[in-house]
Image (cartoon, rainbow, N blue to C red; front, side):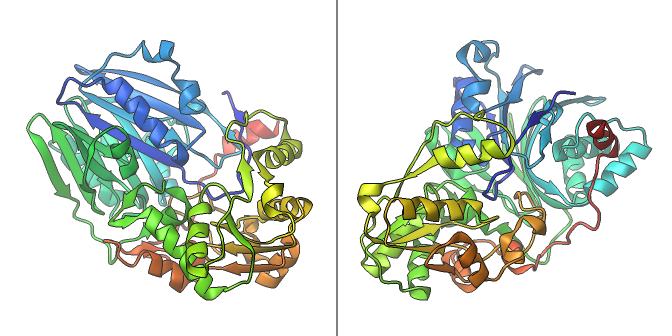
Length: 480
């Protein structure tokens, strides 16, 4: 099996973006889906894929890499536009990544073919996989999508139609999943009963879109219709749009609050709240909690900039650019720790003419391990900043996320090991402040859904995994 080494990110990362299109017009579905995946690239940069259903014939292109790398025009020309199309971008925290987990995942079983693209994390993965393996199931990857596909296919063998099979599977799968499925004659989208990850519906002329974020609908010229509700399955077929709900209910919904802090694009509206507005409000509330005297406020590109604008607006301190970000860094600039060091050195540079001799407030969205924050402080010191104050537009990460964000291990969270004064000493800033949980909740108070802030509080609305899947055979091979 082929593996590539994946550098561990200093940021918390989402693990997927999904897109589905049901073509009722004379629209080039390949070009549309390709453009849509660019709009989702922020949700996953490790692999990308497109599956097209052209008269019941499924064609797929997927590979490791960014959208621009996976789909050169000569590759896209091999696909034929079809009635139904699904696309996917993926991020993974795995140190080794196999291509078998790339999505969309195409399944061929006794009732036909399915192409599945999903975002989230199934928390009862080990239990379900063990049960399926006892029945003779053979897995090609360790992905949630493949497990989900097996469960749906198994349920389809005992139900009258695919819709009932999906609804039944939704009651058996635990955790987070926002998913689109291309079936032979219809497009299906569904969201777990908690609503951990976003999923929304749009229209383009008479055609339908199901995707992770509303910004994608806007980018392809469509019109946002509404969010998919927690526990809802929507189906688009030749008869139009249909909505169903699974029998299983949750006591409360739990959209990931970190979507507003970092994951989602600022031009998205998720469950009734503008991401841009939430980040701007976070900056304003940071000023209420930390009214620091300074000469300039700047944000760490890109997700810290809007909160910095909010802080500047509330405080009256001028907003300025403290950094330049290189957006065109190649992924292969070395190996191991040397690679990580060189990435940090080339990704951001301080704007010396703007920061020299000034007291600078720097706003970022989060601190995970602390290495990037320490590097940022060092850049500003070297550029001649008189003072460097670090403010974070979210609370300290103290717990893992089990529902689709790459925060799996407390050992990698600096806030679980050190107090705020100790973190301040580690990063070398003049002051450090985190937005309180109460203020973060205030930024999204108008949401149509309850929020999950378990990574900041250690309290979860859904049950957390009791066991974790370990591919013991793959580990043995890697150790040889």
